[in-house]
Image 1 (cartoon, rainbow, N blue to C red):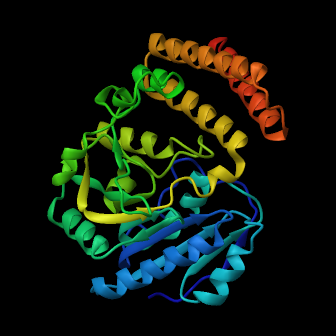
Image 2: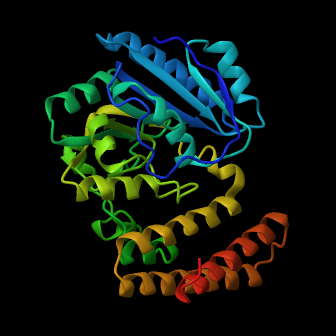
Length: 337
């Protein structure tokens, strides 16, 4: 693996479509992991990457980048001490998921780029399976694996682009069968029997072709957290690239390990990103309908909270988050940001 480069960064974010600093690849693969306050899971993830790279035996080698967003749990110090071959960027503030990924992508030398969440583990031959799939299909820009829960059960790994039914069912879950249905953007479990084309993966594991990123740009920094992978895939699809889920490549995913630490703040960030995404990819009537659905959903949550017998600090934070999202919906409807 390449010699490490350790850095600290507190400067302004690079542009939303940061180009590569070097146009040509210097190795076969760059692995990029953005971490925030998940030190133990990050260490497990890095060990799984080390094993996978050892098994893959890539001819031109690989490099691993970790960008730590000022984790208070000393994740950056752990990486420096226990994984000295990793290229570490230790930010002095939380720059968000897209901006942190772009910091590493800008200097990444891989022909292919693997973006991993720190709460994932590459299982078995997941890495060579994904690499081989991308190598053999030049029209595929991105490949993702099949995500599984820690108990080995199925976790949705791939989705259709978001629409109004998904927005409605997210806030008004009518029936479990609808939640798991095409209406809610899910692909049926039987689809995972073989590779299948998708609109976008969950952003936990994405192997991306360098030339595709060079064409459409890197992750948009208009998103602090959430929806950045959907925006990216929308641009890739618009440019004529294919995106595929390869179920043979299994990746364990501790879903939401970082975001559940700040449930109310994460909820607001989710809807801020969803509003941005809808403004970017949908026509006006659909954007207005989405804002109406969200507003009704927030009013429902506020009503539930008002009649709840439990009135603790967590409930207060949740109520404040719902009010903030309701305000976002109103301001977006009036043309403000």
